[in-house]
Image (cartoon, rainbow, N blue to C red):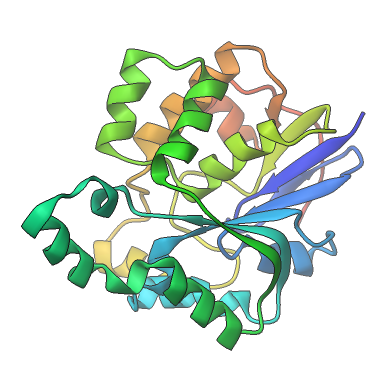
Amino acid sequence: MKTLLVLGSKPSPRLPESKIDAVACANASGFSARMLGLPTPIFTCLTAVLTSGNASDEHSLRRLDGLATGRAYFIPRPRLEQARGLKYARLWWKMRRLRPQQMQRRLAQLSYRYESFEIRPSSYYHAICLKQAGGTDELHRQLRQKQPSTGMIAAALALEEPGFDRVVMAGFDFTLSHAYGANPLIAARGNADSKHTETDLLLLRRIAGRAGRLLTSEAAVAERTGLPLVASARLV
């Protein structure tokens, strides 16, 4: 049985006890993969906001220094894609740092290596999420209100990856905490809650209800989503 591990960036990830055949990452979780001695990710999802210039985003972006991946998926911001006319012009200027060219420039500065840089519209990722969750009106509405987190998009993409019998999520807890240091956004907001949580939970619960190949080695994720819990080998 071949296992694809989707690794999030949360502290002390519980890795599955069974053999890990390949890894997929979200944002700077490649830092954790390297620290844990895991193989280079076959793909990594990178949210456009990493290049926003905000302290919390820089905090994650810099952890990509010297890392590598197979495919690098650029996850755009839906607001810019949906805007038209004058609103588009205003948003384009406001969000100019969130363009794929800016991401590629910053990754080059960090000596971050990738085999391909995949640029797709938000609708592409949303369609994959809906496919894996058996798209419902409720999920459609929720996706229009708030995009899933980068980690959830990575999990949905992992389920599309051929050659694997199961996908296991580790390093997720629905908060803004990071394994590589204190996220400045937590102090700024006064809490560690992720704004993606409602969308993420709905998505994972729908996937769990379809008895698919997605599992988790994190008890907290299993409890909140209904995903099957697999034995974990260690607490790192």
